[in-house]
Image 1 (cartoon, rainbow over the protein chains, first blue to last red):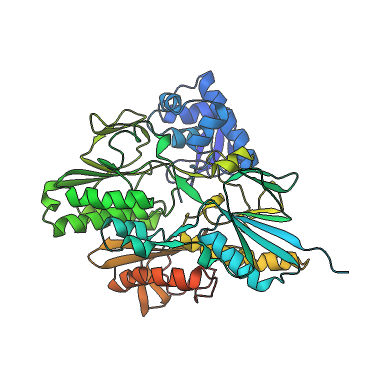
Image 2 (image 1 turned 135 degrees about the vertical axis):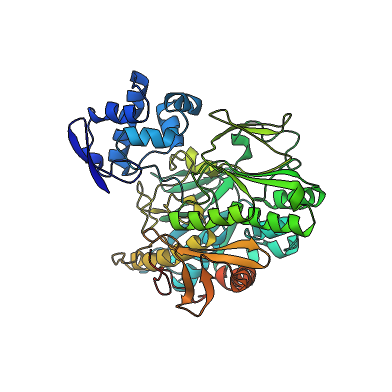
Length: 104
Length: 414
């Protein structure tokens, strides 16, 4: 685990670059994280990021792709369009949350 | 005057449901508790046997029994479909209008493969060029599909996690490799392992070890593949990011979902699993509802071993609850999974919420006789013997000598 500076904030990240302390995240950090994976955030991205943050606050874990899709009414195909390649991981990354587990 | 008898209703007479009613019936006086178990049919399959049926190692008769003889004396077995649970009124509504009021309810209706959820799966080639081994019918059909296979591209595909028995697709791949080699077809077959995960398995040490095994067996891994549809005409599977994998024989693990009545009752998450406390299996929404076996959302493998260990913890807690005491037992997520690797060998994975599968020996340090996360013949014999243990000790609810909590004894720490 290492500490790095993003948008003027000191944040702890793991070996894959995911924030390890979701509380260190705020909305000024997301665009910087997005830039690091080649994304420019639009309103559609922000709707999903805010859902992920709110859902994490209640559930205590990162929503899976299916959960994001069903809870926000966004087709999976569209999630792939907004966060190309690995939407579940990229959404979590930009939102400062751990990788979704869903995988046990 | 005696207090009136209470009702425990258990939905599902599979591995977890059968164990629970048998253990509790022995422990709770019939004058205090009526125990009713509901299932839609009278068929109990030894599900790990499906894999062996596909390769002809287990006969269909070894895998299938009737449920009723496994339900202990003094337990009421009701054969009916569940329409819905009214959690406020504490009533289970069955199809046909019958109602079962409960004081405590256990949902143990498992998880079911849902091939209808990926477009193009249930076409004319279902159970022909597209196979599966997560149902009795599928395993029977796959046995014939494999017997007729003459080489080409064999694609093993996982739709989405979680799935029941997450090691089974790897086992199928290892066994298919050995099966094809024995028939002289391995040189003419390309085996591709397509997974939504970023590697062979979900936990790092095991994923690396199992990934190496796939590599050694010449299996190509296609990771991070989220399927959108199957094109039966072109014989390809297509991902959401528009990758295509061609097959001659596709063995797919369909999306797994909990029972539909769970959704109808408003008790499930997006895959119809009941959200529960991971240490007590108690519903987070309704304290008199519990979900055991694959029906809940425990963050560990959906596997018979987890059902077994978590049922033991649940039973201890339930007896405390029944006598008005606080619940003191806590499930640690313990899973114990044999992984058949072909050529009469198997691996053994033993892990819990906090400890991933590690190398070492089980249950005794150095001597084993089982080897953890490494291949051995003893592991294979253990896996084959388990069918006997299942029918004769596990389902009747007799102790089989494995503690519910995982032990670090014999494990090599990372």
